[in-house]
Image (tube, rainbow, N blue to C red; front, side, top):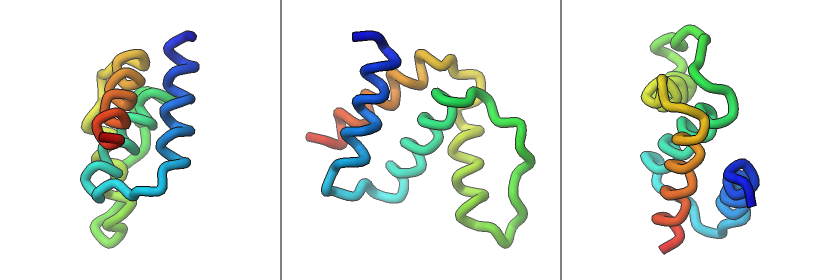
Length: 84
């Protein structure tokens, strides 16, 4: 199975999970997912009043420079940790 297939399986596993990760872990997953799928963001940081959008943007920017493959691996590792 290729890395991309394993990544998609981890995404499906996370989406099918009955447990909800902590907000911190949700942001980590979001940032890694976006980095793996789209690479570095080119969007402007949302304004102060858009707290949720700003947190999500910051989570994505936190992984800037990470390769697609590394982001996929880190995402899968985090899903495995959360499943324990």
